Amino acid sequence: MTVIGLGRMGQALAGALLKAGHPTTVWNRTASKADQLVAEGALPAPAVGDALKSSPLTIVCVTDYQAMYELLGTSDVELGGTTLVNLTSGTSAQAREAAQWAEQHDAHYLDGAIMAVPSAIGTADAVILHSGPQADFEAHKSTLDALGTVTHLGADHGLTSLYDVAGLAMMWSVLNAWLQGTALLRTAGVDAATYAPFAQQIAAGVAEWLPACAEQIDSGSFPAEVSALETDARAMAHLIEESEAAGVNAELPRLLKAMADRSIASGHGGEQYPVLIEEFGKPRGD
Ligand code: NAP
Image (cartoon, rainbow, N blue to C red; front, side, top):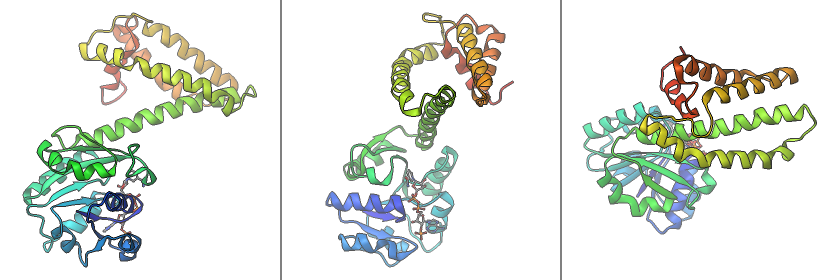
């Protein structure tokens, strides 16, 4: 197979393929970045078109979609019959557009998202998501397996980018909630390391609730089996009050309370927290 784009991530991808014993052709705009991989057994292609021609499967990993089009969208590059696996980060709209572009050039196209750092590539810890035709994924799964834990999400090419940002939303929300609590506790002389194990326990406990919350969302019914949204909103007021009194930033809890208040004003105060999905599902907060 071929790897185009040998930045931090592309080098890790090509390295994992070589380590798994796959003959690998490589190409990068700055040719010197291929040197180490060539020393490890990779075949350097003289031009991007040659790199594509040398294998039925080409992995592309460059800065953004614009860079991919600059590389592969020129008239002297032949894409017909190739399977492109694009592991460049982008949006779902860019992924769907790229799939149409590939189809117009008679290429098979899978979009991908890498939810890992370069050092994890080639291990089970590297979660790599793919979307596009199932048959194209199955045809190359045994090769892609060398990169990490690979999953096919569905035929819609936009799914990988959506899962990617959904995962980031989760990550930032957990980190931001922890930072809020840490900032508050530091005003009472509690350091971050002391609070971290308690926060870890809370985060893991809340994560356990997700399947039951999902059932409520998917059924559209939110009985207050554990607590009502108006109870949560009262506790949010305490968080805002504590933050303001301690001179800690209260923007985030105020935003959360504003969403809960809007939901309560719409008559959902007696329902359970996941009813807020209706607020999250709106384009703007009004
Ligand atoms: P990087 O180290 O900055 O490498 C960027 C690569 O893109 C280089 O190979 C560069 O070529 C190439 N490139 C950029 N513009 C180009 C153009 N106009 N024409 C040809 N080649 C061009 O970035 P990276 O960390 O490898 O990231 C690559 C992709 O992986 C990004 O979409 C990133 O979001 C994604 N990703 C990275 C990580 C991570 O932890 N690094 C994690 C998940 C996802 P030159 O070497 O010639 O400049």
